[in-house]
Image 1: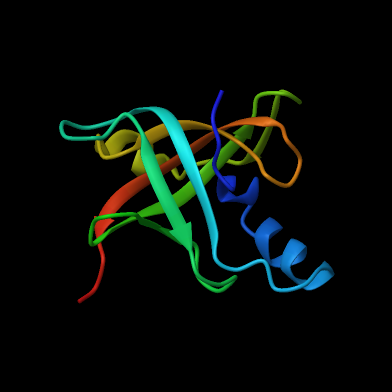
Image 2: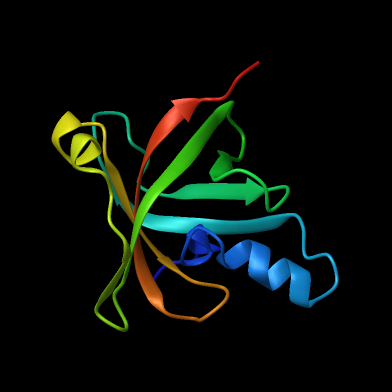
Length: 117
């Protein structure tokens, strides 16, 4: 199982949750069983300070996880597919997570990048 405010399942899910309740920010979470290019951590602890932007800051680093796809394992439904260029680039990272919004198990696709200074 996994725990990521998982792309809050889809790109806008975090923003929708934020408008319906008192300010929930920052969001934090964990992605597990991550696989990808050499050097990919198996566990990613992340935080997100606001609803704007899609990247998740990787705690303790100056890197971000840029979400580019999500598959709901519980429902067997592709929420949004990763771009073909990412899949073929060898840079794609795949992690498992649990959506804090729906509680569904999800696979999150993306890449790890250096944050801007």
